[in-house]
Length: 116
Image 1 (cartoon, rainbow, N blue to C red):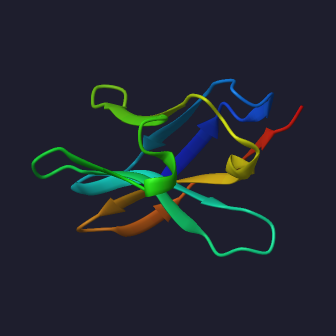
Image 2: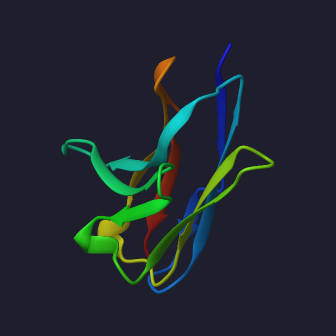
């Protein structure tokens, strides 16, 4: 049984930082992992991804230079370090893991609110 547990969301002032974590268990043959977000009234969008083959990392244009995705293979955990946060970063953030054997899995979502 695959389980994803997210943590790290919260309320932060503009210019502040947060670090999201997503720990996975029961998953194997991982082909990709990453973070998506969904703001009220908007579609879910990709924020940052890691493609395990070649360890390539991709970012949405809106977060380049401010967000960094990383992973700990030993802990089966993916992180999203978010710096210089802006009000438009406010959303529910979801981690996503893809296994080429098992398919796609999503975390429960964590709220990030950027407001003064």
